[in-house]
Length: 191
Image 1 (cartoon, one colour):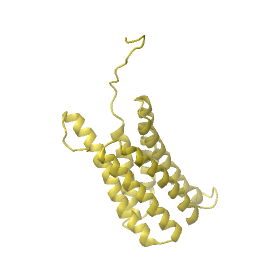
Image 2 (cartoon, rainbow, N blue to C red):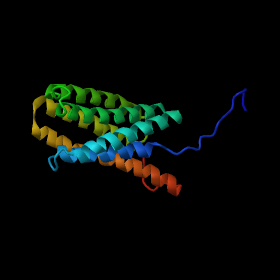
Image 3 (cartoon, rainbow, N blue to C red):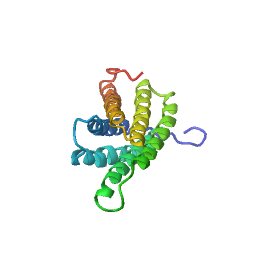
Image 4 (spheres, one colour):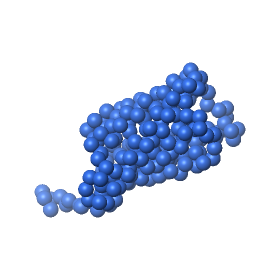
């Protein structure tokens, strides 16, 4: 006890690999579709709801418990991004209103890109791995917004390839944190 305060040792697990893996795997799968390799089907939507969505929200809540404002904001926000994206896709199909227009989706994706850019600025005080994740994600959102705004399948397809790269950078960051912690040394550098 120092100055009347009690210091509590935090022995809880790091929730970041769960959030990064949920984000990374779901991003790769959606962007395999954007790149033109697969249809947008229930596998991608289910990943968006459960692993991209709920797992990231859970990781964000656990980051809050660890007093990590960046992790809380990032994982909770991107988890809710995935949930909102799936519902944007499904609401029109379910007849809950007209589907989102290209212009509406462009605005939606642009704003997510802007949020991600601001989060990227915060990563300049974090690891290089997270800087790459957030830089490639900013570019991905803005490419997808441009693709929706212009109706260009070429831009959306290019964004898909960039999104696959983005997703794999998050998977790398997740695995690096797990392996480095598990082995007690740097197995995969985070920078």
